Length: 426
Image 1 (cartoon, one colour):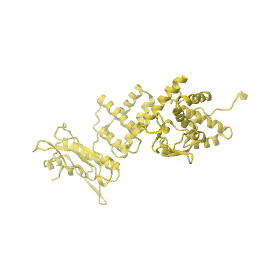
Image 2 (image 1 turned 90 degrees about the vertical axis):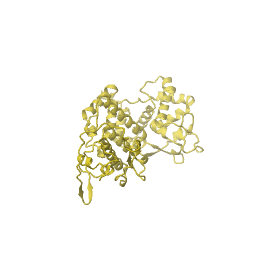
Image 3 (image 1 turned 180 degrees about the vertical axis):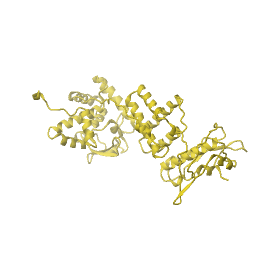
Image 4 (image 1 turned 90 degrees about the horizontal axis):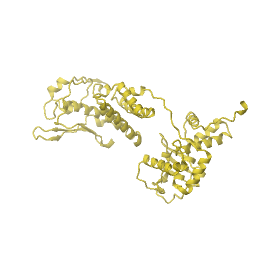
């Protein structure tokens, strides 16, 4: 007699779709995956409880391990546990019980066809149905420690919005492979009409990334979302400040807000992005060698020189705890219990209140404008003494752009490259 546990974990090549799923009764709890918080040194399994016919109470059943813990990667373990969980849920809904003899019921439901090659059992799970929500949940888990926390939260939020939209439209996806492309397109169109083309493109990128993870782990046959076209958008860039504007702002902040001024100088002189400045800690500043380390956009830790003009502005940091954040609301070097994005947003709002409102600057000017302004300054100074190509080659080492094409596009976008006076040609 095969037990319910053997039925779940046996190697199956063709698992026929079950014709009907009975209404979920309170005879069992929804099966769940235990992943030991991602610890591969511990055993992972599926667990559930079932109504004991003798006691009339829900009883925790034996954990289902199967072949799970033979695998040494999170991706492999999540994939097989999702299959076990799905099989178990179907078996329970069809009336299988861990307290009964399920042999006859099993024979009527499944055709087992294992194929062996070189003493290895080949298993085809393509007929195992996984709901859209389960597939998204699995893909999100696989994104853990792959993307940063901010991106992960963004993935979660956008996927939840998508799932909720489907429910509002009355679209029930019991098998992720049955999700119509038209439904995804309709959802993206709704985002575009309600917000903007750029936001629609962001949703498309998010969903495509999640569905690609599903494809890579054989939860779906194909990621069709990557073939949905991006919409053209008109990106908005902060304007560069004129020399007069920049000098007036710096002079004003010397007495009005010295902390904000130093924050801006890290953007201006070291050409860091605002969020990169917010990541800086005391230990990242090496004054002996005149360098700093920072996590750049979508890149690993990078090292930059600190120009002398900025070193002269820094206070004494030697007595401070190396783990202190460099910038806090009240002091240079201290503790600030806030998320990275909240810290970045705080300084953006502070800049608006202290500077933008005072100088009457519109929405086209922001903290990012200082980076544009000083890159423009550098390029125009360099190109006076060398060819444009040589100037760009030197500038790449300072800005951190990885390709000449990317730098040239950036310089065009901020209007850093201007032609010489062409009056004589007229």
